[in-house]
Image (tube, rainbow, N blue to C red):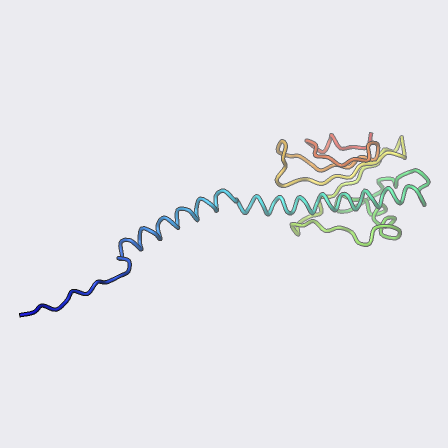
Length: 159
């Protein structure tokens, strides 16, 4: 009497597959926590704000050399943080469009000018994910010509 040869099954058992899926789930969760997509989105919007402050600063510098004759526009009455007279002057000459806040919310750009010294001004925007202390802003000052992160809006006024 002969017996039938045993067939060898090749493949994975259900337990082995479940273990692999569980390990992959744990690794995916760890990567998601490490990447922190919410913070990356905030940093991307902050980059847009920094770029917008730079565009406004460049337009202010161009305006002060030609029609301003060394002076920056006065604060004037304004809406959305940036004076409407300043926006009118800049969009008529050097600023192609008024920058919108990347988050789609209220405009965060603020312009200040020193009325005692017309050659001094500052532009700043609040940051969502600052590298420094909470409540930091991105500030450009005409006295230095440099934009940098500062703590608090009071630090970014025209000297």
